[in-house]
Length: 182
Image 1 (cartoon, rainbow, N blue to C red):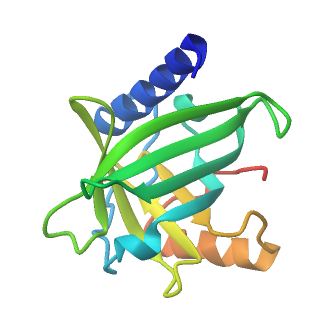
Image 2 (image 1 turned 120 degrees about the vertical axis):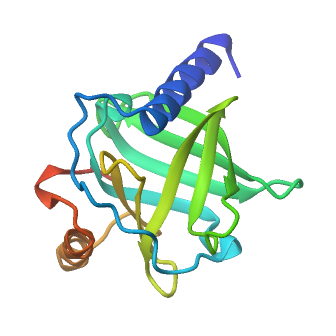
């Protein structure tokens, strides 16, 4: 990894972690009453690659397309996280941010604490998911951040609409969603 790539990853990661822990006032709230995750999450089934289909736009993701998140189990039981995106469009330069996550005790696997740089941790809540782990809706306690993720890079308009409706049923302002190009 070059020094430039490392610095870029640290900047992206630190911005993401800070935003998740201390949301900026300028980041609008899309859900003032975020529900607790209702379904348990089996970590081994959640691991792997996810494709972002939509998100609440945040400064640390501005201009990002073809966004993915990959989760893998580390030997110590923690989870390695690699977030990637193409900056400025589908053919733009790739930016990555690496982190470590741990499952929050007592959360049935549905809540993670993610650290892009120690000691700052961000919340990652799997608010809803498919029984077969083909999609998930992820948020955090402030209601300022929301991600709709799928295992498939492309989804049908009908599937996308169904996922947006699920986010709406969780209390989110779906008018704030930004569709991600994949």
